[in-house]
Image 1 (cartoon, rainbow, N blue to C red):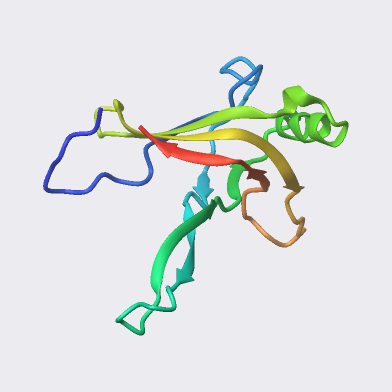
Image 2: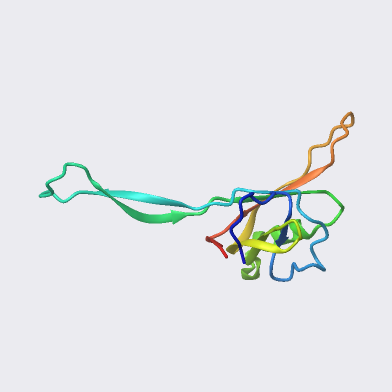
Length: 150
């Protein structure tokens, strides 16, 4: 899917699919921002007692995946909160495969990040200010067990 090129892709062309029952018909707006994609591998240090070198070896251990944050403008839809409600009620179906696609200038998929067994862990409603003129933004923080790139 991805091709090498001299100029990097812009970060503002992307699509989010929340998976499961949350396909195009249920997710009513695009996301303004997605942040937190990554993977971190923990290292264990090990050294045999009879090693000639006094420095320990670094052995890869368990990996962990950070929480991913999605932000979008409030449009009156309750789809994100309903997903959180499924998680709160302990429904197994709350775990989904979420995909984030980076798009080229021609709106063709370039790279895909796949979040496996993702479920919402925090929802934040917008702050309200009678003197402000900012757009009301809601935020959903999603935990997942694995992030892969395709």
